[in-house]
Image (cartoon, rainbow, N blue to C red; front, side, top):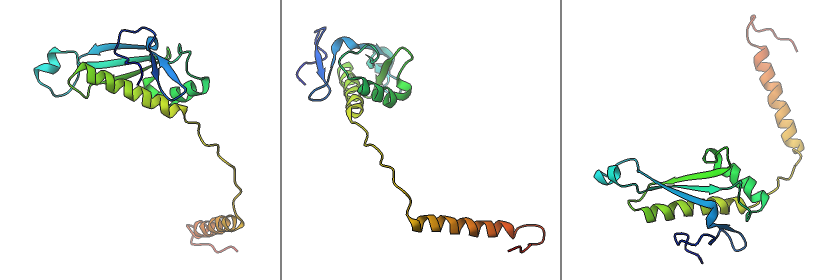
Length: 153
């Protein structure tokens, strides 16, 4: 990375791909207490990070990337258009901060990939025949059920 996001630069660029970047101003961090095992350290020190990325207010990402990122974020996207990631895997703030940022960048990189368009194909004649044959066979099985097994052909 060219700019370290932990530096105090207010307008630092954080590269997502070769051409796309996000601004440090679009990110905000809150430190909270981590859950899970860890003894006194977990109870006393706020090492977990909650990273918020303002997707709705971002001006550097193309609109189609924003739409795909919103879909990929799922329940992590708030109604106000923020993506919230929580990182508490590590014991230190710095490692959790880096972990959250890397996860956000990975999500945004996935959002830059355009989905492959689906090409419509027609079913083959053989597959149509197999489908109709199985429907006829299934109908015969159902016809033989109940009422003493009528045989109407």
